[in-house]
Structure formats: structure tokens, C-alpha cells
Length: 258
Image 1 (cartoon, rainbow, N blue to C red):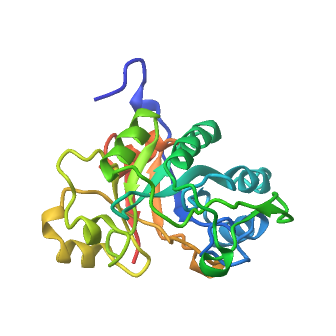
Image 2 (cartoon, helix red, strand yellow; image 1 turned 180 degrees about the vertical axis):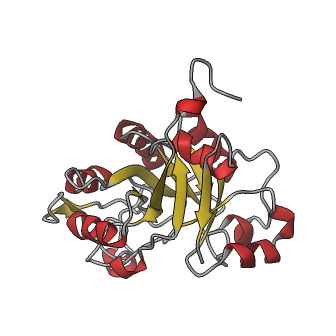
């Protein structure tokens, strides 16, 4: 159904190469090379024009990557990879940095009051848009929040964000591995498959999930992980358009390459 006051027939649809799961140096498991200028340089080299920064339980590095990309034509979507109390990873994507930072405050309030132990988990570096060191985030980020999977998904929706189940084919920290199923009524926009999985392979292994749209992202923790794997046909780089593409509605569409 066309949106009220909108002439869908006049929408100009264009193709976009996207990778919506990328970590920076504030994620303790990411390599030191994952700094804003190198992420942007690699994305442009790969022909990507839309990426999302999705660090573990924080959006602290989004603005720096956006600044690094400001003159390139690459759009950087604010996001976060949040870990539920069931140890399920959910990608939380937003159109604006303000939304992501509002969500960050909620996530921080649901994290345990513990300091990161860099000798155990890795350092959580905060750098500027040129990659220069500013400080370390001393919160324990590589852990579960107190929020359930259902709560995370519903609250992100309430804030105007888009939730995706991260790397559902993985044996750990995934919706299927940890819960064993997709809960009825869970308002996910889709399921993400990892860079090791194919759409055909996932569909064959999980025929009961045929109704769920799939997206392929890199979950990049080093520059060589990044992939221009998913191509989306949309009328602009907004999460509303992404959801239409995931659903295959109004001429929008999404193709995940092997």
C-alpha cells in the first residue's frame, strides 16, 4: 500500500552495495586497524556506498566514522550490536546519531557495573575521525545486558530503529543457537547470515524459516573481513527503505551474493 501523500510511482530506485555489520577499535575483539579512515578507505575500495558501524553494546565510534566519510559519498549508518541476557546478538540500526546515542544510554544502564579488563577481553579504544587515540572506554562491553531479546527488539522499534538478528547461522551468540527458534511475534526486520553462509545453504538447513528475509553482512573485525556482498534496490539510504527492500515491497529488493 502506498504511503499517504507519497507518489510511489515517482520514486527513483537505485542499487546500493551495503555492509551493515562493521566493528571499530572500541570493540575489544576488533583489530587495531579498524579505525575510521581505514574503514572508510576500505569501504570505498570495495565499492560499498552504505555501511553501518555496529560495535558491541556501544555507539561511541559512529560519529568519528561518519566524519571520516563526510567527503566520500559513503553513508555511515549509526548502529550497535547488543547482547541480550540470553546471549543473543541483535543488530540495532538507526537513521540518526541522536537515536543511536539515546539507545546507547539505555544499553549502558542495562550493563553490569564492571570495568573492562583489557588484558582478558582486549582494549576498547576511542579514536577520532583521523584515527588518533583519545582514550579507552572502560565499561565492560563484551557482556550481556539485562534486557531480553524481545525487549531489545521492541524498544528499538519504539525508538524508530530497525532490529536484525545477527549471524543466525553461527553456533554461538545467535538467535537460533541460543533460543533454538524465532519467537512468535518477534518484530525483527530480518535475519543476518554470516559471510561463511550462503542463502541457499541457510534455506536448505532451515526450511521452516522460509518466510524470513535474509541479509548478508561481514561482521568485520578486520579490514579484510569487509564485503560488498549485499545489493539493495531502494529509493534512498534510509532504514525504512531497507525494510521495504527486505520485504521485497514497492519495487524494492535485496540480493545476497555467495
